[in-house]
Length: 548
Image 1 (cartoon, rainbow, N blue to C red):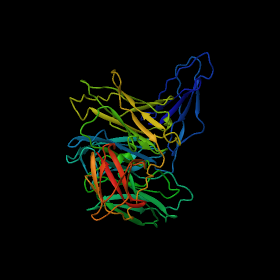
Image 2 (image 1 turned 60 degrees about the vertical axis):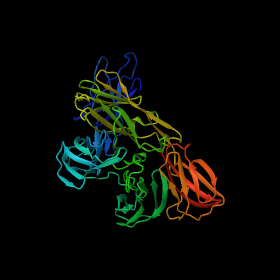
Image 3 (image 1 turned 30 degrees about the horizontal axis):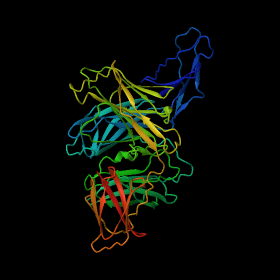
């Protein structure tokens, strides 16, 4: 449904309610009959660009003695664009267990969109068992679902049952993508846009990871842009690139079992929201699982949705996650990065749950009017008030208890929200939710936290093109002690070792002589570090350390 903001004109209190499938909505307000300005002011909350409200907010006076009023909120839908939106999600992935994924879609166009379809590309480790809407074709892991004609401002959803492969390791990231067609970008872009459009992809080859940067647009790039490659959480390299129309370039990194990520700049003035990023986890082994969601994966256009979730051995039955997770224990994210929240619930009682209400009091550092309700396991009504409190109301869901049907006892809901603009470095965003099952006391989820930090990847590490002395680290990963060994015969007279964390902070330094030194890691917290070796002022080598 659409979000309608309803403001009490007497007291200035606002609430946001969602329309049902037919466009109807209900709001309740209280007034003092002895005071003036009894009425409501109506407006669309966070309307998509293709929905154009007709003029100023609608003011609806309440006649003396009336207990209810009815008012239409006129809008004009953009008739020049096929504006489709899609979202995909799931509650959990457990090895050898089934899970139900939900694909939800909506149209924000003012005309019928004929012959729409959704392509879902499932993670290699997910096996499709069935779906509520039959698929029409399968190519590899990509399933096509014909959803037919989509009416103006209409929404729909379907579910897909999958099984997680038994070989999946706990912590491994499973990523799937949904793309709805026709995929039309309703943003024309800046007048200065050259027509170039940058897309990126990744592939695991025998002994290397290949990243490919494409220009799939209608014009050449105006000049050089930059890309960066991150190994786990450490900057690996940064290089400029420039591509003609139809051009591409390949970048190769070693298949070490690390989690690799490439971020490329998009052509200036490019329409839409797509940010060129690609990643690869577990190529050449799975040494550092669970790092994919530290960074954003879903900064893309409305007609595309990417969902990544780690495999778990067990789950907290009622919890909340905020994506991206953020870097380090501090959970650093950059300012103005949108947050995707996943709230999971499970009936752990002894009887069927009929109605479920999720109440989420948003941080004051988030914009309540920017909430975009997303995919869910069950149909819900979305509501919000003027105090930054949002509600997801699941009526008559008949959720069985976990001892009767473990899989069916679980559910989830997603939503996306924007930060307040340009939050200062160090700002902290906390969030939790209360889950009510029928008339039981609320179950309070864990509290998520994100902290604002600019320029996350500023650590200066020697680029791959710079040849340093080969260094053996034995063992790596390690818990307490590790040996750093330079090639035999190397004599270092004034050796100096520096260890920095993923944010460039110096955490340890020591001196050594010869070609071997013993590293004491007992004071280091578990995580990923970079070592740098010097002989006097001369740089010798650098590399990665993993402390368990």
